[in-house]
Length: 566
Image (cartoon, rainbow, N blue to C red):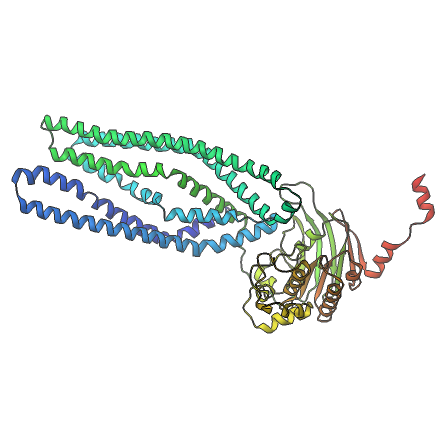
């Protein structure tokens, strides 16, 4: 069964705003008729009757109509602005959630999706959407011109059709290069973000020149296609402007001919010219803002694709706090766009309160396994179960309260130490301090200038690597989780940090917390109960620590070496 379009459903929550704006557009376009009607009455009645009272009353009525028009136009703009705000309230958080989920699966940030949403949202408040609202009412003006005279109406209808065809031609010419330009821009911005995250490496090894050449590639492509789109759009727009001005003048000529033949009045001639100009104006405005329209449409489709790829999970029944029994069943994972699996049929199980050490050479799939254990990645086959429940389908908020995770690459958020440890959860300070003490970092924190209220900077820039790692450990054990996964938790630690980490694991074990540690350091592995050896994505060995360590350190018999060399 086809999944309903989530983004369209969210946009439809603003339907009331758009219907209101459409209603105001009808009133605005009806009030625009005041100008031509005023001219018609002045030429055909006031001048011939020389009635100053009639002229005064018509003028007052015209000014009142224009005041109402201006007021309604301002109100329509306010309504669309409120629609933009409501879109942000309804969609922005959902887009951000999808970005987080997809980035975890794809292994990289995708802030472009949020830019796409802002592009679409800002279009709702731009001038282009006003022209879209005005365009459907253009037939009103053409119908009035038909009332003035059928020949004038036929000319106006033909001119409108020509301009609409020109607008479609503009769309056909501009769509491809503008889409390619937007895609190149997205790649350029993504590469820029990546470069800024690695400025230390770039500067230390003199990579700036080469990096700029690589950065320039996407930027040049963006500019090239942007120029092509702009040139084509400018050509068509100039042609449309010529046609609109020519038609407005030619309808005067046609009207003059009809006046000479006494088939219509002078007022009708001038009124038809003004009405035709108003009917064609939205078409010209839409073509003029075509770039923003195409960008908004492209952004909408990309957001739609993102939300479709990351559907909202059903809330379902809230499961009780897990005890920590972990079982991995034939876990296989093949990354998107690849045919080679990183994990192949990994199977093992540990009881609640046990500590598992995962070891193996680089590229064995250890970090990928860690991300599966905490539900960040979804298996291609098999399952990871915590107390029998599949963690990949468990509601993230529900399982996140009972899981602690320390990734291999530690990055703190640009906020206080306390906010980072507490996972931005508004709770009592006691739990934050308790987590810091458990991680052995409390004394280090209180020596900071502002203690727990110290701003760590973007990515924890003001702290050393080991300090960041120990704060990350405090975040992982915050809230007394049932299950903790630590990926290379001692990679940046000194001897004191190693001792604090070992003490933390011992304390977690006493509490009955299940712990999985990925590490190469003997001091860390010495506290585990069982060991899993991964090699090339498969579980090569699994069992009690002493048994696995003895098998790993068992000397190779001399005769085996001699036979291997012969």
